[in-house]
Image (cartoon, rainbow, N blue to C red):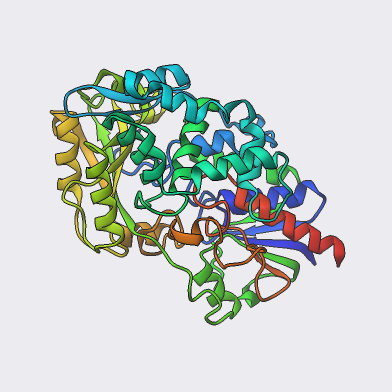
Length: 469
């Protein structure tokens, strides 16, 4: 009998398996698709030689993850590549605010009226970032805080809505960039704890940047899988699990799946009926004949570029998708251009480009024209560079990854108490009604992103039970 079976070979499932195998437990992973990866895959979606990331592409949380940093993933081929700028936010006048590794450079891009306010916001946390990020990503109950005072100060700053936090800024440049940071998790700006979301992304950039993985996000998953195999773990692909009886006998079962999928497989009925999924996204992967012709020079060297004219436009777009059940006319966009720093991603002189906007859950329309009209505002002539495009709305995203219910790449709404307490209002979020069944997906704390911390935290709960048995 195995000690543990993991269902789903995304970053969280693989991390949970690795953590258990490192502690001497026998582990097997079962994945429905023909390769590992989940939200961290790389495929030729458009033309031969153009390697795209179907979901996550830039990894501020991955490079800062306490779980990943404790593993020898670089020995298994993972290499972080850092663009000249982690992120840029261009404006229609041809200028841009930036999120740089340097706090001073970032603050200066906001203008003199807000430079000091931004530095006062982030500088107290940076010297204690490694401890803070471990404490923050271990909530609510997998470890006692190592620095409860700093964590409490962070909570005072971040738990109110982001609009409260940005009220300290006088000009639109800082407010707009920060609004875009919150938009990465598809949360309207006035929601509970949205200030913390924006602050975490900013601090992550200053601490270690927003890199891409050389060769694509698949490199992260492949490194985890290779390490797991060296530890004696097994991985079975092309193995769809529809019920617990499909799996071999084990002392514990760990699911890197959505809560609703777990309930169906394990027969938990309506146990997760109150779990809420968020809006979906409409994503386009581009093969380009050259770099994106950004008007703002800062955007040309940034790995990630946010698109939204101002904070009002961003909030309008987020509200349309999440609360008004309509696609926005001017979508807020997150774009990533990996080939500005990774030449392996496209043929010589060509580029790959990744862009998405928010849409209602399950939306079946086509947002391509609206996205490209937005791009043309900040990069005139963009359409002339397009060699091929691959589009994916909510139905296609959900078909590629069953955890993206309704096209929700965050695997659950990041709003209300569900920001912190997911998938149930419980201090034991990785447990389920069955003492031998656990959940470790992005539907558990600390939530979305390729960082493995949900798997890491769930593994703690699993090995405690296995040692007690």
